[in-house]
View 1 (cartoon, rainbow, N blue to C red):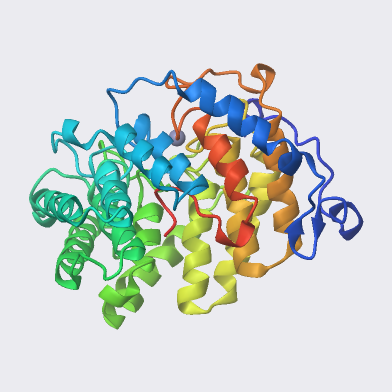
View 2: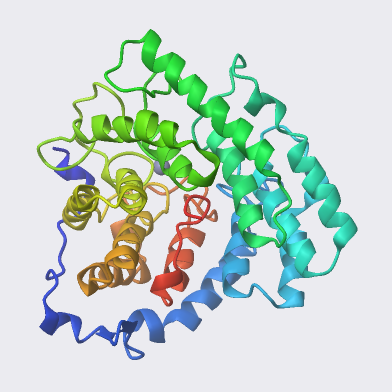
Length: 396
Ligand SMILES: [Zn+2]
C-alpha cells in the first residue's frame, strides 16, 4: 500500500476537547501557531520568492503563481496590484498554451481581473479578447488537444469561469462556455463508447485513462459540476451522474482511488492523483444531486487523507501536504463539522514547521505555487478564513 510514501500521522485525531485548543466559535483561535507565526512566515517566504525565475509566468511553476498568492493576501491594494501585473509580465505571453495552471490562461485571467480593478478598461478588454481568441483548439473535437485540467479544455474553461466569477458583468458569454462544455461531453462520450467503458464519459491523456484531478476524469467532472447552468438536465443525469457512480465503484479497499483506469497501485494520496481529487468531485456531486451518499464518499476520502496525507514528498499543493490539507477545508465548508477544520489546522501546522526532514524529494521548482513554497504559504493564508478558502486554480 505504499506506506513509504507518507509519514505516520503524529497528531491525535479530532475530539471536541482537543479541538477547543485550536477552534473557538468556528474560528481559528488567535493564539495558535498558524495564526501567530503567519506574519513572520509570510515575510520569509516573500523574501525567498524574490529570487524566482521571471521567465516562466505560469501559475503552476512560474511567477503567475506568486502573483496569485499576492492577490489572495491583498486583492484591493493598488500597489500590490501593480506588482502583480509586473509578475504576470503579460507582454511576454506567446499564446502557446491555453490553460489556467500551465498556460497563458492563468496569467491572462488574473491580468483581466487586476486591470479591471485598477480601472484599466482598455487593457482589460484587450486581454479578454486575447483569452477568447485561444478557443479554437478547445472547440475542435478532432484536435489532439486533451480535455484534462493542466494542459487541456478543462484548464481553459476554468480560466474563463474564473474571470466570469470575479468580474462584473461577466465578460465571457454563455454561448462560448456552452460550446466548450459540449466539446468536453462529446469527446468523453466518443471515448467511453469506442473503448467499451461501463460509463458514458471517459478521457484519455498520454495513452492512459487518468482518473484524478489534474489529468483525469474526476477533475473534468468536478469542473462540469461547477457550471451546471450551462448543462442540460439530460447531460447532468444521463452522462455526468452515471460516470461519477461508476468512478465510485473503482475505490480500493483502503478507501483510496486509483490514479488511472486498471491501475492496482494504491500509492498516491495527493491532489493530482488519488482520493484528494475525488473528494472535490464527490462534495460537488453532493451539492448538485443533494444525495448524502456522495458526501459519505467524500468523508471517506478525507479519512484516507488524514491517515496517509502527510507525504514524504513534501509540502506542495499538487502532490504534497498543503494540497491535502485543502481537502479538509472543503469538507468543513460543506459540513460545518469542526472535525474537518481541526484536521486542516493540523496539516497546516505541519506546513508551518516546513523542514527538510519532512521533504524527502526536493521539488524541481522550489519557488513555485504548485511544487514549491508558495503553495503551503497559500494554504496557511487561506485557512485563516476557512469558509472562503479555495484550492487555487481548481475550486471556483
Ligand atoms: Zn502533482
